[in-house]
Amino acid sequence: MPKRKREDERMGKDYYAILGVPKDADEETLKKAYRKLAVKYHPDKNRDNVEAATAKFKEVGEAYDVLSDKQKREIYDRYGEEGLKMGGTPPSADGAGAGAGFSGFGGGGGGYQFNEDQAQRIFEELFGGGFGGFGGGMGGAGMGGGPRVRVFQGGGGAPGGGGFGNIFGSGFGDAASMDEDERPFYGGGGRFGGFGGQQQQRPRTVEVPLKLTLKELYSGTTKKLKITRRVFNKATNKLEEKEEIITINVSPGWKDGTRITFAGKGDELPGQPPQDLVFVVRQIPDERFKREGDDLVTQVRIRLPDALSEGKIDIPHLDGRILRVPLKEVVTPGYVRVVKNEGMPKSKAPGQKGDLKIVSDVAFPKKQLNATEKELLEDLLRDKW
Image (tube, rainbow, N blue to C red; front, side):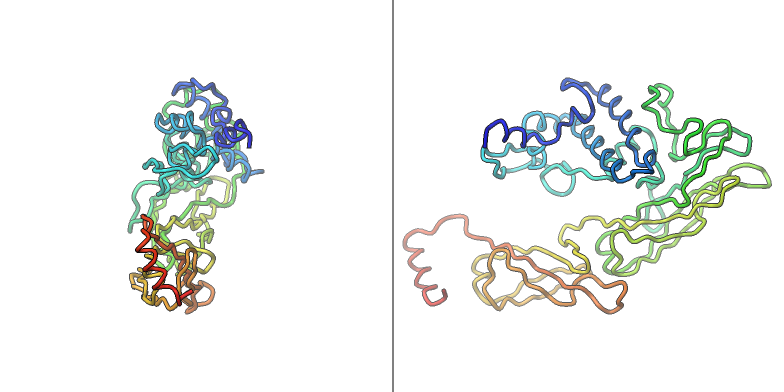
């Protein structure tokens, strides 16, 4: 492969081009470019094409996250996107793996990772709040260890009042200093209402992520969440904030994407029916298990002597049990042992579970055998092949 092609592949995404800034861009230039593009591509401003907008919004956030961080930017400038994702170590000339990596890039591993939650957090940090419809509206500490949910979704004040409905939960202190195309979209005639008391039709639902651990989805749990929403008081002809506690009983086996609807628990603005509040389950990545449908997958490291002999491996399960799994055959690298009925509960089939798949990672000695050791091993294994 030509050297130039290898370098282009290693560089990967052009973060400077994504933000439309020069390579010597300073912090203010990066921030200005990010604000403009984040508002342009925010999913709440692109309801007709949410999927594409979400992908672009995430890409813009990733570019800003890398270039605004001195350490990440230095690695990117030197080794490109591949260097970031491999932990900050340059790949070899043939594109093979790298050595030790950086820590602190997020995602649990040494390499750099970026997701939609991080994109939303960056947006909230720079603008002072979150859009209720895109993973936002959640923050702070809630009752029972759950998040605090603020359901601020609509524009307009009392009839004829001309107030601005705060969909962001908190103000935009520096909005006045932004250029027109950097500002959040709350101007007159926008989807969220605006000045002059103009009311626009809003979505009938407000979606909020409900983050749950795999352990909570395995055993089930109860979440108590405090919501703060807006209701119209006919007696005073004003909008008022109302706090309420919502209880969600999480059933064992719920999957990522499960939706729990609370009818009429969103904002209630004058002249419009109250919105439905919809919680969408989002599973927090687990360090030991990966979920595949109703099955669980885990990887275990087994020493070569144990892999070649009869024995057992202990697997700490999500419910605190220790599964003692016997080894009755030779374990090769990548060998998968399936334990029936030890996966995730099936929410639509009470009493039934998926399977647990144990993937073996065989640990070989770090040093080669000498001639004497090799001869002894060959004698030992002569009748075992």
